[in-house]
Amino acid sequence: MDLTVHVPCRRVGAFALMALAIGAVPCKTLAQERSTGAQDSLRARVARLEARIDSLERSLARSTSTGARADTTAQGGDELAALLAAAKAAAGPTDTAAAANRQFVDQSRSQPKLNPEISATGDVRLQVQGRGPQSHNVDVREFELALQSPLDPFSNTKIFATFSNEEVGIEEGYAYWTGLPGHVRLDLGRFRQQFGELNRWHAHELPWSEYPLVIREYLGEEGLGGDGLSLYWLVPAGGGASGTHEITVQSTLASNRTLFDDGRRMSILGHLNNFWSVSPATFVQLGGSALYGENPDVDLKTTVFGLDFRLNWRPPRQGSYRSFTLRAEGFATKHEVAGFGQRRYGAYVGAQYQLNRRLFAGLRYDYVQPLGGGTAIQGVVPNLTWWQSEWVYLRTEFQHHSVGLYPDLPGVRNRFLIQAVWAIGPHKHETY
Image 1 (cartoon, rainbow, N blue to C red):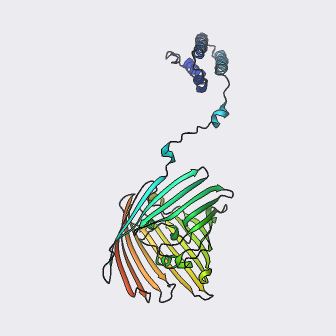
Image 2: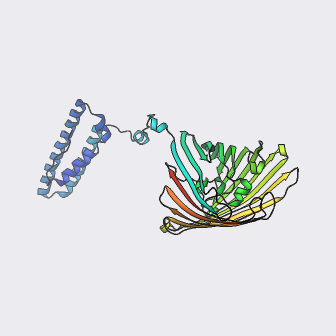
Image 3: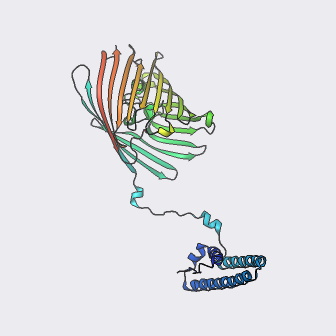
């Protein structure tokens, strides 16, 4: 229905009054009166308003010809008020509060909405040993399948299945609840544990091809993971110069072979993490971790303490082209068998600098005292990572470790490798 009122160009003042009057009729009323009777009634009301506008035009013309400008203004104001009142009466009452609070909810349950988000990652390495016979030069290390989905408005799930060396396993599989009282998050299932910083990361997202030597020596070749529950709490204090603080407490089965010799008792882990924004381009992270567990079957008690540090620099105007990260972790571990044990120490320091949009140069120094005794192991690991795209990166890395009296690896070990990692799906190269 075309309700446009055609007014000659010379009637500019009257046209403005007409626009105000017609605009005062809410769209809600026009949408509701769609029946034929309602349309006829609305046409009649518009016709009456047009007649009033014509009367006002004639009154303005007479006033202009006689020079009575002041009286015309007053009369025009009265007429305008009358027109607005008539328009509001024709529109009827409006419920603006109900319109503001109206929500539209999609009640459909289509099959695509029920499907989880599916991602996959491939990790393959080509390597050459510095000494001895060449073997295992191609390492199809891992293919990872990730399933993630909200379960309902209160909980979500993540499942990471790994396929490596003819083995299939669940690296992580847990449900988590957010929005609990006190802003606590609860994780339940199997997950990589929050000891330090890098242990929580998946291997394909590390800034190096492998976990630092201290993590592999003290927490296991693939790091520390457990079955149990985790509580995460963002401390509701601080901010700004006071920093941001997180507390994580986890209770899992003490089944790690390196730490607990495949025990079945519960272990307890605590982690405190602190962030400070030093400048718009720089932030600092400092954390502390503690882990304790027992295996009565072999009369074993294990404690591990850790400190982690990270400094990030990324200038806001060059964030895609320049960045620098410095990180370090130090561990102190003690195995007590029948009340006897010796504390061992290890650490690493690593740095990564972004050369341009896609190229990153990294360097890491390792130091660790083996759990089984013997001379400390030291190493230097430089690498160069090129992000071909958001989905693919290629890395060249050189590893130099002096292993001293370490069992099965006498002398010095050098290794050169090329690593290719690719990913598909909505969660590409997720750290965890």
